Figure 1 (spheres, helix red, strand yellow):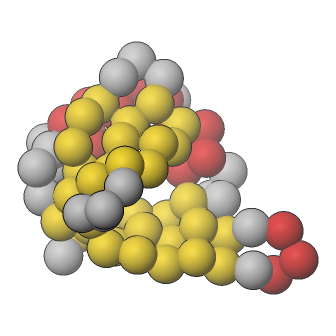
Figure 2 (cartoon, helix red, strand yellow):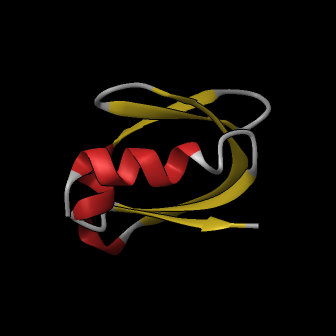
Length: 70
């Protein structure tokens, strides 16, 4: 999958609420709800209300991060 295609698909959902699951090492997962805020050429940001989290498109490709639109 091409990161530019992913960016174009996410751009359609800018400003929407998303549920994010982050799969870490040793079977640890982090899940939170936020708003897809900004999209940049290599990264995108999600505002959780009390912090801003940054992820790369390659993390979506490798399924380290999974987004679900609410």
